[in-house]
Image (cartoon, rainbow, N blue to C red; front, side, top):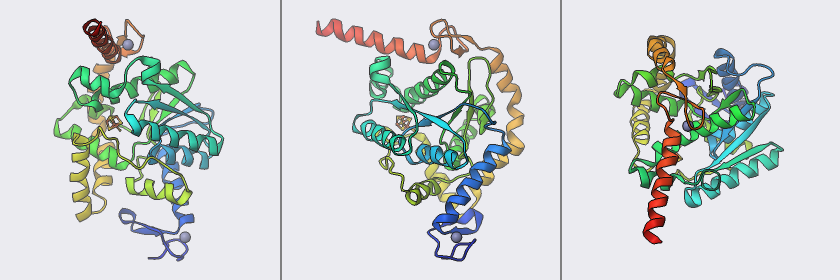
Length: 310
Ligand code: Q46
Ligand code: ZN
Ligand code: ZN
């Protein structure tokens, strides 16, 4: 296998681009794709303060690294989810990258700062841990950005993630989610801009990028992900992609070009119904936002436990 650009030995092939790359040209390829995504969707403007949601996994660390390669200065925020050794290891990788590259990493810890962990939330709500986890991440990354003057929150969602989420949204015809599924969500009252600069990059490419760049990342999957729907959708899409390379990209980009705008009205009416949460001020369709409700439920369960043991 030879590099499409320089004919030197290639280390990775990217079938949907009919290309293969040596390490140097692979990094250039990744930077080019991220640059294209940022400009095409006007994700980040000069002078924006950017906050990267850093999990310690390959995508978020690659994103942080790629942004720096494109001269976009960004700080990171690591959220401690309290998922045992997995969270400990993830934090280690996030801190090690920040330290080695002289980057600023903020940290928020669910247990010590907010009084609960993802496993506890799952137990109390009797729901999948990913529900409480996703809700907490969305809320806390946004809140942190608003409180600390960041204009943009950048997340490491890649093409495989976006295709799996899109498939889930289509299978349920969830019009609100379809309308909000976009690589850039503009800032509105109470919400910082959200961007996904890795939308053109496959999962396998992000792992390869980290290897080529010598970035150590959390290779373990989250132990709470086992059996979740998202993984099932990814497996289904991988089977299709294997037979027809390029299907995931056609699915996601076709939706963005020809499908997304059809759900504008659904999003506009959802947005019109938002008002500040009575407890924390974040925009919500009810009186109290889902995150504050979750916190209250966990606190109530704690109080019951205390009474029982006391
Ligand atoms: S961290 Fe959280 Fe993921 Fe673990 S509990 Fe689910 S959502 S799987 S990206
Ligand atoms: Zn090359
Ligand atoms: Zn709230």
